[in-house]
Image (cartoon, rainbow, N blue to C red; front, side, top):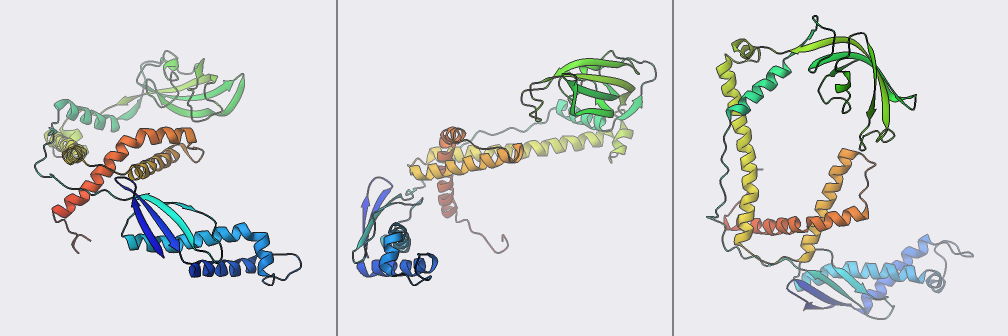
Length: 374
């Protein structure tokens, strides 16, 4: 087998591969034997049709299989012979193989860049200061009180007010026809909360226990139930009971109820947890800043095919995330895929650069994986 390599750019390579006659004829014989066992030609038993007739009926298929066989069997050897390592699948250009004749083809690809690590120690990145404000601690304590709140019946009034928890029966109608999922009994809703449709709980303010009120509600255009999206429904709601949330006092007794000695101990614990959380977030921010400094300190060119592959991976991952959120009905259209590819180019190039540099850093820093690590 003869192989020549031509440099077509900083990273581009073009292989010219010539497969000898003996190997071509052997590939034809192998392909013919496999084809003869599977094809059915009228007037002949399976495997008994003459070669000339099979080649007359299935010539294009036979030559295609021979071409694939010759390229797949010789390309790896050609790359090993020239010591070239493609960063992506080579693009092969080949003609039809012929029995008794050498077979030639070209394979074009890009090779990895030669990365010279100029500097990786002593890089300066902006420090992320971690502080926990008193307001954040108080907000967390308030969330705990909210979580521990109990519902207590309202005895001194009958009118619905903001903050009340209403027990209700409701029915929804579109064009005077009840729609599936639009009815409920003994449902509970917090007035001013966001558990129901926008405007639903506010429409109940001022209503009295035992009364039935009607009001229109327009479903959002992006509502999950497509048959209701953008439509206006009329809801009839009967108020059955009023309750209010009674939160425990923020004192030592509350702290003991949640497992701490007193309120000071609980406050200190909350502050420490918030500090740890913010420190973790700061550490996560430090990594991309360090990678950015590393890339800026070590400029080099990267092959377009490596960037393209990384961008394709990013688009596939984005599509998988969207499918997990929106369900199997989500489909990545060609237009959206093309738009995502264009938007991903800059980030993809950065990831390729930083990934190649990190490999060099690992070598320079003599990073090794021990049995204990495994």
